[in-house]
Length: 162
Image (cartoon, rainbow, N blue to C red; front, side, top):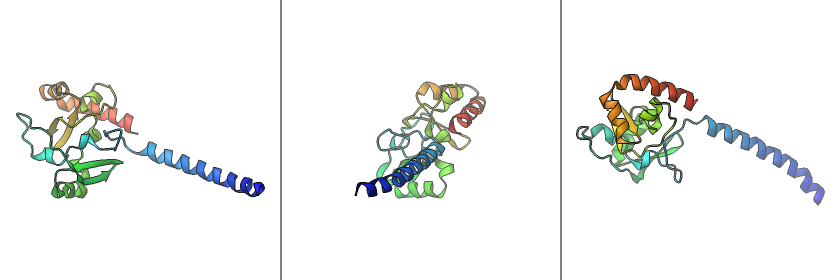
């Protein structure tokens, strides 16, 4: 009986090792998303489609998504206020997902790495949603040359998301 266990345990161990390596490769290859540690909810559960309809000045509050309108995308759970919002996102996630998958655009432009956001500080530049860790980052992009900051953020994102 012991010899049978030994005979089968080695192939099983090898199979588990191969599976573990494959899974770690898939996880490492996934593009990072600003999401909660527990639950994997993107941008603190805010509806990424709704930003397109919000008033920008004065800046309106971000819209909370509902659990019942959840879409899985890039390894995160994206929540939406309505079925309509979730359908719009499903049809064209590239249009509605935030730049840098919701990480702070300002932090990236300053070389500070991937800083999570909660979706409350935002701006739309050329029809693309950008999120910020704090209002000061948003103000910097609005008061300065956001296009130059975007070039810096794009370069940092390229390095960090590869």
